[in-house]
Image (cartoon, rainbow, N blue to C red; front, top):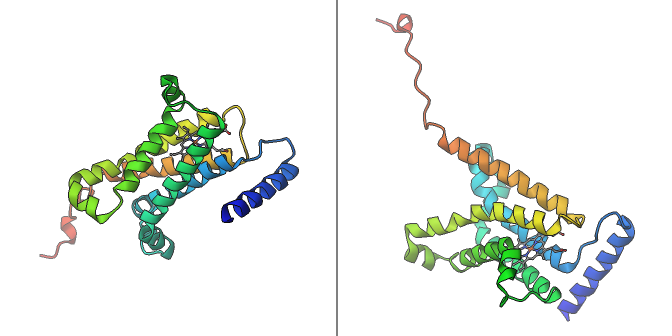
Length: 204
Ligand code: HEM
């Protein structure tokens, strides 16, 4: 019943957007909306670490603490939305996974989905204990997903942007820029060489 209500409300929203936007841009089918939600939730999981390094003054803010506290749950939401997004599109386009060409056409989406699935099943204390330092290596795959998703959205939407497409791409550009800045800051020498002491100031 709730699913029917949700689909109905979504159709109403879709119709209103179609009326508002006219034919200027494609309106958004539910599958795309779910892909967009998956992208947004995924980006939220990246923010706490990136913000801590790029903007240390945000370290103690309430919003960063909340994001950190619920990072696992947000990651699971990203996975669930990605699953529903992929599922709907596979059904809509009759995508045949027995055809090897499919993997080439959907390689970015499928690869990102595999990363999301690996991260979702290992986002628990048991996996952290079992995998030890390999856990960190595995979870660093999350940064690869940023680039795969940019390719995915660009490749799949380039001929027919919806009004969500520029927002999604902008989110990706911002998070990739922050990530680059973080890497740059991490590679700076830890402490700058000390200035030579001015001997005239040293009391004898
Ligand atoms: C795991 C993560 C995934 C995420 C986060 C994701 C996200 C997105 C986003 C944000 C869009 C653009 C929506 C818009 O601008 O309106 C999109 C489009 C698309 N995605 Fe994904 N996707 C994922 C996986 C997949 C998978 C596994 C498939 C299929 C095998 C797939 C197939 C597609 C297709 C066909 C489109 C274009 C839809 C259209 O032409 O309207 N995606 N995706």
